[in-house]
Length: 386
Image 1 (cartoon, rainbow, N blue to C red):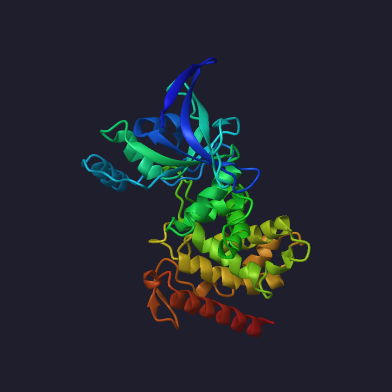
Image 2: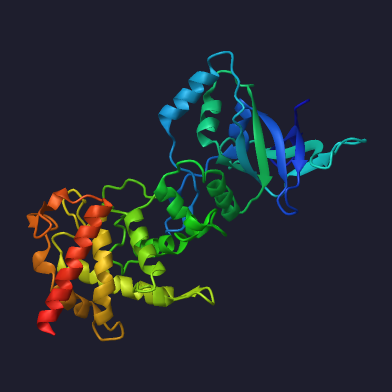
């Protein structure tokens, strides 16, 4: 195969590569071709997951794993290299593919031809493509000693960030992606790669709402994959704990959030859920101000065990709170006052559990034991006052 590069007007040049076009569906063509190691960085960027100033999620890739990249680079520089692990790249919709002339250019499954990718002359300009799978490999290739080392590439035409994220999750669904990265991306894609992940889309979107809404007591307290280190913001709550708690309430017919879903119509009253969650957790914050907003090492209320247990208590408390009343937060506080004297979030030993406050772990047995204790104590207190 002959690889060529020709000049192109408008501050761009065109990279030409022999390629195979495969039509797995009619709307998103797939191309198989080769790039030299030094060309990967010219064709595709890595879309790091983060959020813009308005809080909108951008990108989808996890941070660089430096040790992993060094190991790949060492192998690439070792001499006798076989590197079949290719890259998957999302390419712009306006790329051109010219079928080869003559008979035998297609075998019914793939068509041979030439792929043209326009790349900018300016090194600082955005690249036309995005790495969907193989970001660690792409970083190693960019630093490899053999600049012309050939690397196989699968490219698909998709400028839509939603489609890129969808493919990223599907490609990595069998690999151990960080749970919080997968969870945060789910609300941003069209369809989840599996029923298990689909069930986490709505809870993850609600966690986004709790983290970004200035009226939420969780505002800027939740650690997400896109969260950047910021000394002025102490993010102390793991998103997975909240996602699991919300999923539990949404899925159970007895859950406080279940009635807000119209399963037949496929709709959800997210504003109603927002008000319920904000009301309850604001009351929790105001009932335990000394424990709120501190790292889990200093407060088990912010710990996974505390979040899950208090979420289960929500199911009992919010039945007795009228969200249409003048001050529903105060009403929720009055309910929480029934169990407040028994809580040991920052010091002491939990009565009946016989556990020091900082021995509580994010384990099923501890979560269940604490949940049952708080619910029993709440119901007992109700029995003595009503």
